[in-house]
Length: 636
Ligand SMILES: Nc1ncnc2c1ncn2[C@@H]1O[C@H](COP(=O)(O)OP(=O)(O)OP(=O)(O)O)[C@@H](O)[C@H]1O
Image (cartoon, rainbow, N blue to C red; front, side, top):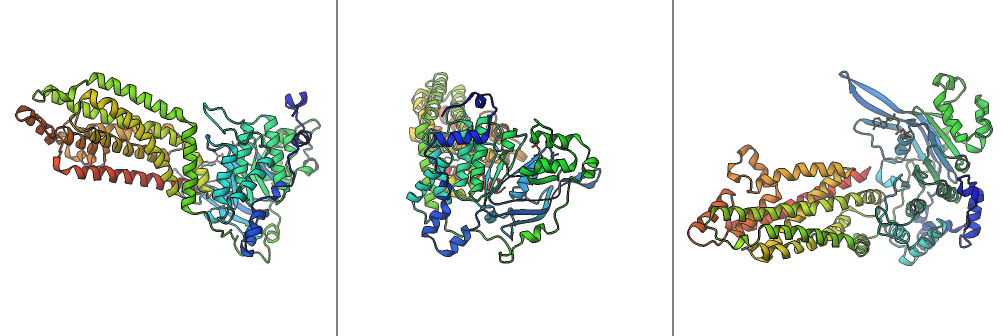
């Protein structure tokens, strides 16, 4: 495709541009979006599921929508109205933009309509929403399935290609009865519709891995939602972070999608005039209220009637925001902005023959096993495509282990009758355990923080359930941890001359690293920002060092804090290490020193199975909490 100077300079005429794109891309079938799940499904489905799918492309109408923030100030309750009596509609077959100055309430309205603000805690939402003539409650998980939600950040699996990402979404979200071949056909059609044929098999990439462009990523994000044939498509700032060319492509795509029958609603901040010209409808918010609403084609006429005609050569999008920001509320009201909702808005929206509340498709979802297999395949592909992670882990662990090996060289084989030797041997065991704990959990937390937004998006849009996700992640973490702990054990075991068996050393460090990783993932699940998780991790892990027996004998720790040893994985790993390492000592002073170490750390040589059980219990508990937290987070 050739790009004119005009386009290069950013003065892109969208229609011209898209015509150029389409004439250059002869493969584009303008009707291809009609080859979508609904139709494919309909060929093999019964009439009841056809009805369910006939929800596609329905008008969304809302009235009296409010959002209040309840705060306690000066001893009393105060209410801040973030949104007040907001009304509007997003029509099927049209794109509707929500605009407003910063703080006008765009995101609040958008998220309220998308059911992403729970009416609990400090925020209270209210209002009536109708979809296709029936009452719609987007906070209900099953009703929210009808909404495709494309967030500002592209939460995509970096090691997948656009084709794989869209297929993943198709296979897991389309009904079970849609065959794999049909899924592939749908994916191919969507890739063409998105103009992604050329980039279909390039890695999405991110971070240090260069992949497809930002505009292509945004189109993939839209594609993974389109594939589920949603009734409503919600996009939060779909053009943010894109250059004018990519932004124009995305907007034109949304217009095409809407004109094929879908209901497209999005927030947007300061669009250029040519992008603004692609919108069908505009909802202009000001201080949480609807200042103006109507067809974009009539905007010049409407603003002239208000007494604020759009000046020539002025970007109408800038003009409406300038008016909203620059004129006082009183004057705007006098000019007849802020009209109330038409009396018959909801009455007109309510259809006689529609069900009382929106009915959602009851199609059978693919099995948990399919979910697991799909997730597993994605993990395997990630492993194949990111060998650097494993290589770096082996090299770093190997070097660190060599340093320990050199410092504690042969320590385990030395005479234990010496107090300094037994103290150093204890230090060697604890040092290896602490390094195992820290070494494995930090990378796991960082990896998880990258995966977390992908999970939240996919789980909240019904790709899979928590259990298959956690099992596939567990498998991957077990593999990464296995490689790292094995390399560590191979280097240090003979260098440091441990007296326990190689298998025992490996098993203890492996179990400890899995438990520490479970804690890291649990904390990672709690926070959006990995920095917070890392800070809390330090707070959770460092105090455990005091229960390792190295810094202070456990029996000397004050009893009112010593209970904490029972929830520390390091305690049990250290006890196992001491039990195996100091079990058989030469009679005499050596045996006495060994017995003293065991006694000071409450180690019972005959109860090692208890310690294993405790480690397993902690692992299961932290994993379980992690899954529950993630599930909760993904609910909104
Ligand atoms: N959870 C909350 N707690 C306190 N104030 C909130 C909350 N959510 C929104 N607000 C306030 O409500 C107002 C509207 O916020 P909102 O994020 O919806 O605006 P916006 O139009 O999307 O702004 P921007 O374009 O800057 O993102 C702002 O003044 C914001 O500070």
